[in-house]
Length: 310
Ligand SMILES: NC(=O)c1ccc[n+]([C@@H]2O[C@H](COP(=O)([O-])OP(=O)(O)OC[C@H]3O[C@@H](n4cnc5c(N)ncnc54)[C@H](OP(=O)(O)O)[C@@H]3O)[C@@H](O)[C@H]2O)c1
Image (cartoon, rainbow, N blue to C red; front, top):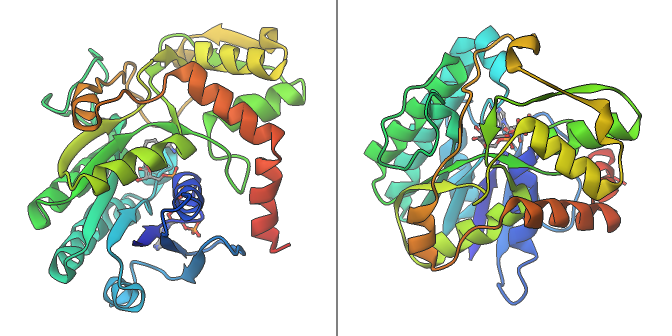
């Protein structure tokens, strides 16, 4: 398959593009878009483009002729969205709908990446049937993006994710936050009253590829089958890496000094995904183990070298 991954310099996009390119016997030819980042790799073909510039989406699809498009490019930083709401609207709401229209016209299949943050987190245990209630600009613009995609391209898969993993910058995920701070023996806060179900970015790729192979469409929760507080996540990660978990102070998110509102309980149900694929997504221990194995294999350095072009 010819697979186009947008946002291939980001946390999810880079890991997805690398995973899709390395599927053994899969024969995938992968293209990945970058905007600001320099990205040098032989694993896939990097294409520099600002997807918001006029005609960029059409040119990109014309150039790459994809069978499958996985749309990861977004303004994913919650506080940046609050600071620049118009940019957030263009990237998270308008662009997905425009891309979905163009992809539908060309006959390719689309996976649009969304977020667990479309829920207000008052209850937790959300299924795809539950009504979203986004708090803040990021969540609102992402929900508008979902709706625009579903309307423009009913065949599209919309995957709500929450993830961690290794990134080029080393600062894009909560896993990296705990690993690098604890490694430097710095004290950090761990929220005991914020719950989520993070899945390793690298473990998302095979799930999305299976959804595409099975020709499915619609909304899916693509998260870990196991949920935890952010504190527990940090403590478990510290234990696996042999780091000092006592450097994590358990506390309430109210003491975190965060600007944008955060939903406290973003635990999602994955029953629909399990029914579609016939197997559950990985649990947290499996994803943390995979995160650790990648570390042992020098994967974080491998990603950093891509940015330096070494
Ligand atoms: N990270 C999480 O924990 C999390 C949780 C839930 C959902 N999600 C969703 O997962 C998806 C990926 O998130 P992420 O964390 O991987 O994001 P990220 O690391 O911030 O990466 C964002 C990507 O978008 C690209 N981009 C931004 N503006 C662009 C533009 N105008 N034209 C072309 N590309 C542009 C960036 O390119 P450059 O860097 O080259 O500029 C980068 O590759 C998003 O849809 C996000 O909402 C993420």
